[in-house]
Length: 254
Length: 254
Image (cartoon, rainbow over all chains, first blue to last red; front, side, top):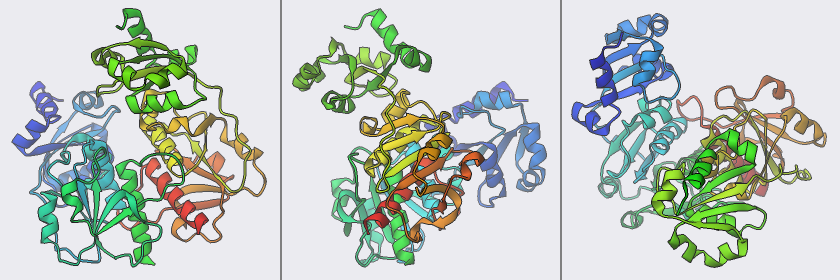
């Protein structure tokens, strides 16, 4: 059963301020929590789950050694940010910021400049994960990754993609001099016909409304674009990222 | 100024039942309403807008001959489904269902089987519009296109893409016998290397949770898939559609 105090603490984690102060965030949903329990490098503070969930994932729960509270689906729904019913909810310790990995020219990094929408950030993590991109670097103006909407939209991919926040200017300045920094613009080289496509580097995506900020534009080594065949003015930033990654991976593999 | 009755009628259009009964739907936001006023084939019943909007789009409004109500941004926000402020809101007559165009083998049609999420349907319209796909056919189980969330997510593309609802089985049975029906699956031919890629046909996408229904699977002439390079289990249906369209257009143009 869920006590009033527990319910209050869980609801408090819907707020960014509380997440920051406590260094904790929420993960919601059966499937993603099963993945979380199996992943070695995440510290679970507590797990709230239905009797059915506890039975189904008994050994994983035991192995994780987490504080366990059995509650009803109704109780879980009352403290969840999800609209639909959920069988489990975990309170997880915010990890130390992922260190920027040794950069190498055979893999891609996604750099995000001011992505505001939590759904878009979650979607970008899922896409990075699909295309084997292990690292995402976000400008400090990008929305907070521990927002439950980001976690939900990432469909578990936040567990596999390292994400860090830092001024992108600093990040670009640390890179080897010959690193390809491909900036997504509405006008640029068509990603269908990229001459001498690099096999790794940085893919820079700008905010939904403003695009890539002018201060960063000078760091872009190649402007790329997705060819259009119709009349829509733009694509959603997640959709654009997927199409770009798909072409780069196709060309890189070819 | 907005009367109480007007506010009530506008809020009633947030509900599907009222939209169906009255044959009306809402379009919200400055940019899309400017496009709507310029488009010849949509019947506006009334327009609610701020003084600034009315000044900026004076001639378009006059030309459309629409009933105009000037109101404040606060009044508009109070009846809008949008979170952010909006300068204009239009009540539009639901058009007759778009007749299925003469099918030809040099263009693509998107067929949607049970897409539930309004944001996804709107996103699919925007993607169709980007890739020059002029027709979308939805199963009757697909979410209603006049939901304000669909209209908002389509970013004006609902104005340019013809959408109809019909049992997909019937639609497929009407097609010329040699029509390519490409079904998106997690396993199939890689869209990076489609042998003898057709230059037109149908792209069939299944629901977010269940995929393509088994009754329709027998109609699919080729199973296609998006190659993965990482660990995510799937892509969002809109993202998948964009990547598929991008490859088909690239191969068709080559």
